[in-house]
Length: 295
Length: 257
Image (cartoon, rainbow over all chains, first blue to last red; front, side):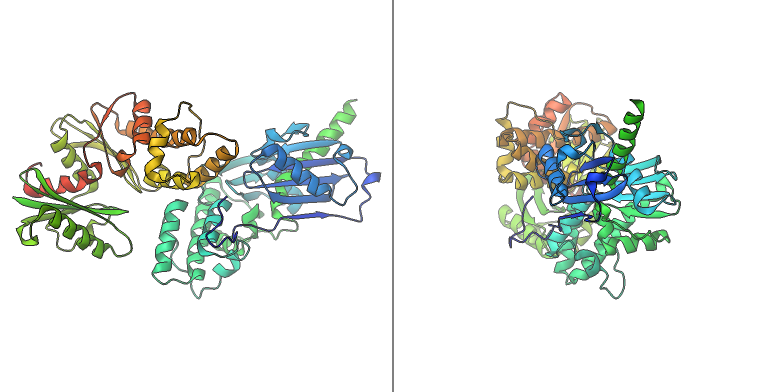
């Protein structure tokens, strides 16, 4: 990943880890984890008896097995738990086959559906996962089982990587992009190029023509929203609707998706980036219970 | 008759001045911020190269994405028409014409009289245009001019999965991390782009002879990958980036139709 010329890494989002100090995991009967190794970010989620106990969210390095290990280690940090205490691990995401300590690998589509069901409850029907290098529209049933999905993983338009390119170009930190894009008096026309490379040239032209950064960001957030709304409409949307992944944290894109759809997305209760790993951990719990019953 | 053709591309403005089918002068200027200024500058450069004054030019035709910016043009033609006219004069045996520019790619099939039968184009995605190799050269930290030469020294085919220039950059970076040699990455870049161009060309049907024009035709690494992919040699004229401009200059003179 190249840094911009000033040496500042505008694209670098805040990595985080968390655990619930009120849960005594040593008393837990079912301790499972899900590890989601995405193309841009990796997460690990640990569940104790079906309750969220700990998670981590960090950037994926160039080495998938190491990224899985790093995410797991960071989720475990300060909990007193070790990898050996986790009874079942499911790997998911683009690098799911590279989670050396996982018992099973499950696709990210299935895990996102399952994770969103836990995060938003059984009324959730449509999930839009806006990841680092792909975008998925998923329809799920009341148990979080995937009914249908559409995805774009061929093109950076509508993905987190596309937004990182813009954050770098404008020298605006990625976490500030959304709010800043809303500081316009009226909506500009959207960036007309779909391709991120061409959109970047178009945006440079707009800046040279005297557009303030806010307006350029608004034009790009609008284009991005338009792109994913198209994906959603091809799949068909049923409420309740929610957005997961890193872009779910960008209010500039989220509010424009909502406006274009005429539907509000449910407010997230947890870090939207952990949906996949959370789904993986939930599958791990179910698989472990099945295994124990079988014995 | 002395005529001029101006091709206002997305990256460069190219001008050709010809008389009776003979090129008198050429000029090429980065389109930059002010297209109008770039057009005047490129025209002046071509006039100087030809050693003639502006009033000696009897007709001026324009082509390219920004052709409406040429205010004093007598007429204009689409890029497809300009390409076909240029190649009909330079290489009448061509039945398939592939033009890869900075931000666009085109495949054109012509009949034995040089008339356009069918065409396909990509103008929406950087992965099928020169912008792709530029982005990959940047990720590899190799000057664009060297990327082609470097690629020719590769002996190993490495697969590149990304079909997007943005994802391609990340993939190049991870190939570097995996200690893949730069020359093999350079070849992977050209192979990936050639695959996309070939599939575009197959949409119109690839019939020999095949001619390759546009700025990317000057990249020997891409040419090598394309020939391997098409399983045939391609004809590349001298100054392949000036073929469109030459085409409209010849159309202005009535030398080709």
